[in-house]
Length: 319
Image (cartoon, rainbow, N blue to C red; front, side, top):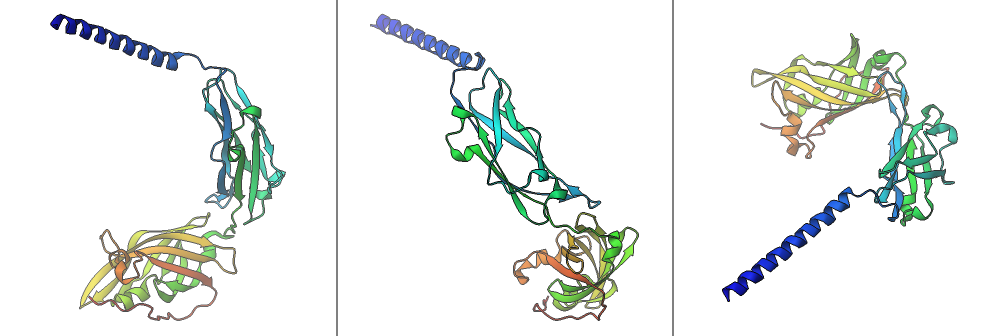
């Protein structure tokens, strides 16, 4: 009886070994055999619905939209190159002189699964602030994707509205009015070197909400770039007094400027810090500020100068 079991065990083990070998051969063949030219496949666009905007360099020059338009092969790679023709759909709203394509067809090389052409806008010919559509269809005959959405590409393209500063940072000098850290405020600016020196940030907030009087300082330097951004690197802002003791504070923030309206505007997000601390007052006490962990200045340049006006919008903080 034991001999019979031994013989059966040997036969089963041998069968398993042969099956394993056969499976390994099949798997090996699958990854080493050349592409099957007769295998079925279809083609479709990759990321067929996207939106893009032009940009601006720090010097104020236009930055074109430059993006790939790609087609992918769904199936095994083929032994011969595949060429897919592209056609501009009648629903396109961007004019022919507002963009270029590096080619009107896409070739997928033999053995590969994708190919692309490059779209580049001609922004100077595009209307400002208006979104235009480029709609393309691919033509691969019987190999078109069965999903109609895969054979039509729609890119929404927009030239952003941007009005450069004629005289650089000098155009940002003067008196700015608006809301600063929950208080109507006046902030004044002058040029210092290549930066803007601003006075008045956070004064209403620190005096009225925080309950400390500013006794020294009160200015900070703002870096203004030609492409619409501003940056306030972390730096000393002012010294206050509380309970007879002086407290030094710092500021750090960033934001944007615009110049397409009647006057330049700035929208800056920032915080005020105890000197050397990692978190600012707004972040630490966001629960008293409606859950908002930062301060905001939304101000517009005016030719008029007026006295600083403080109107309470917050319940003074009690420590």
